[in-house]
Image (cartoon, rainbow, N blue to C red; front, side, top):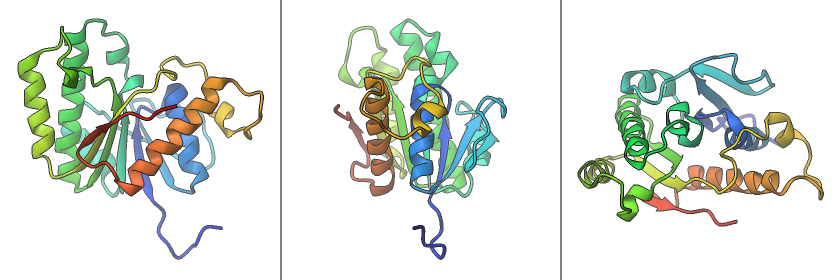
Length: 209
């Protein structure tokens, strides 16, 4: 039972659409957190008790600061951003991630929100051929210089497709549910554990399983 005297943990989520976003929202609700989906279309997420919606643009620092004010933590699921979904070349994907992560760092600093998790494709940290070296080093330095408690989380191998919605994760767990649903449930739970516990500040993590 929730202790009504304790303030709820307030989570803002960029990238609430798609399978992974739905899994994260439902997991946050199961913990009785205040979950706010930050969207460019307030009607994009079906109305459900406990889910709030608010306008938000993860590529504009000022818009980020307005959207996340008063939150305990911000989670950005870059996997669901249309700009990234349409970007096939590594250099283009990196440019989009660069824009978003920079806007998030600046926006959260303005809003005085201290915890940030970003789910995405961070192969540019691995010196993989095809990714720009100079801007990659610049973004790494921006991250290292930031006072925020940020964590980068590698995107799961499932969840990129919009196969599942809120109702799939709101349903009770059963033995014959799709393996992808089970995997996304576990991934979302691990991400929100990290969000609150902050065990890997200023690190990139990969959630197994």
